[in-house]
Picture 1 (cartoon, rainbow over the protein chains, first blue to last red):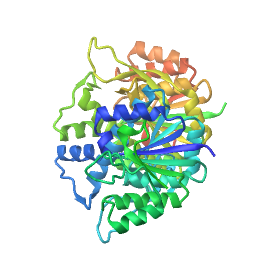
Picture 2 (spheres, each protein chain N blue to C red; picture 1 turned 135 degrees about the horizontal axis):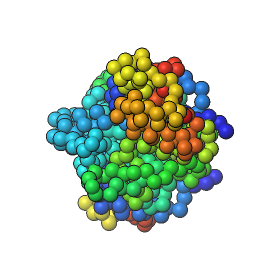
Picture 3 (cartoon, each protein chain N blue to C red; picture 1 turned 180 degrees about the vertical axis):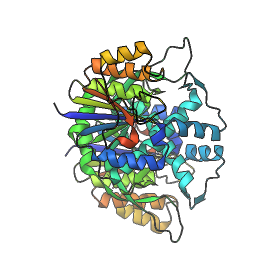
Picture 4 (cartoon, chains in turn brown, green; picture 1 turned 45 degrees about the vertical axis):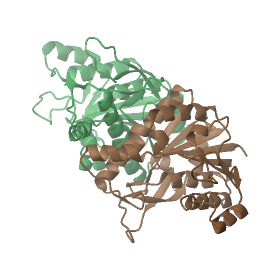
Length: 255
Length: 255
């Protein structure tokens, strides 16, 4: 099986032109087939405010009414996605930007209205492995944004981490998948205040022990739960690292 | 050679939800391979105004500064393109939305700064026929928006009519291409005030005669010049019609 890198970047890269250029330099140097998944919430919130709409969040998740959906799709699938694609093309990487509607690649279902009505927010139902494989076979690098569709004509705002892990799990049936989550820290840290205290590898037994002893910060637990769920679903490796370190080995390997 | 329909729609369809639904019903019923090209200037102008930016036009063409480019790409490649793609998917048509940067499909050059500096506006330089053919061979319907790139990382606002005719001309080397321009009138009219006076066919000799006798409105001349230029470049037929008539034969056939 060929190797495939699925790499997720968030707002700290996408909304920062200098960090984005440096990241893309490293990204195109990756030798294997790759898929990029990006968020970009900061610019969406700025655009909403500029249009006189106050962004609404509950538990760190965006409430997406009809107006917010327009702005989110415009910013994620339009400006940010095409900016990344054009920059990859300039580096000789043949990228194609996709929402979940394009090629019907990611279908989602609107989230139940209880306990919180998040509006036009979708939870991933399925990923079209054949479509992504077809693009990869053509030497194309898919660039996925945080927008999906319900196959009934409605676009839905969808968490980029979930898109990345759903794509990684689905592609594990046809590729040896390494899934990398880039975030603002160097990895899982033994001391949250010390960026040099990166734990280089965590296996399931180690994770359970760290949870039991409180040696891991509460905020990291859902990220690691997701990582182990990807491993259980057949993903080869999950890596948590700073986007600035894509070109080196600093980071935490899960699995 | 297989037949291919290249169909261009403008703001009067894209910015009108009811007209768009009716058009897409007819579009998916077309039996052959097809490519959709869309504009959408009305929503871009509305969004600019809502953000406190007054749209600037010279000779009916948008002056695209850096802020306007962001909004144009967001609206064209984001909200409008993905809305159309999701609605096609809901109709069982496997659409993929593309800017010119995606797959490097349309490269353009920034327009010279003299006599008018239009800003981030590009004139089409080349169309990647192989990429479009690959998608069509997979049963995919490309949906192109009015955004291209210069292959150096810059996105450029590009006239949708020009994109449609450039794509039609390029694809004429591998397909029997019918190029349809949808606009707000029923076709080329013998009497501009009478929508029932559609001239069903115009050949080059007839066009020259009409120009000489003034039997054709000044506004139609550039459209017809473009149409004959497409025919000269190998396009099989050019049709000018109302988007509401895509499912019937009302319209003007050029060639």
